[in-house]
Length: 176
Image 1 (cartoon, rainbow, N blue to C red):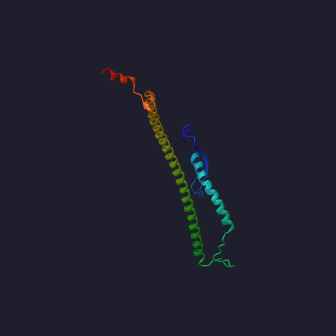
Image 2: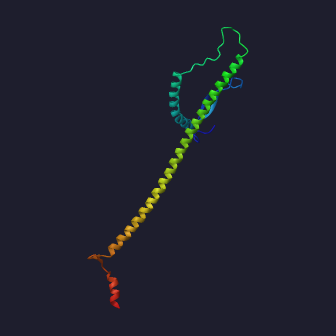
Image 3: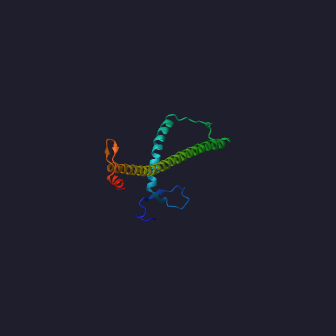
């Protein structure tokens, strides 16, 4: 068993034995359960449970009654009863298998959608971070350009719409 300090999300719980009794077990088994996965599964299945409750209510209200080849009042069973039993059993097994397959498919779709949303969220976070970085770079360039223009306009004063020539430049021309 793992140390509690290393993995706090694991929990040891009692699990019922699913074997028919021939396994030699005591009927009380211990299982290690990941609480995080259990909570995530509960979140995934909460929508499904609501849908299933609605479907169950609808089914319970409109239950078709199947009466197939009922036996007569005589106590004995005929030669075709076993075949009828096998046919009913096969139909029931097919129905349960379809229900299980549908449940697994819905569970896989829910897990896929959860993983997909996590991937999209991570991609959006990366994109937002890069977008912010580009915007900061653009703002820095813009500020640098603006400050450069400001320093140029401060150095060259204007008179009647025309820039004045610096005194340093004019003195060089006078010396010659």
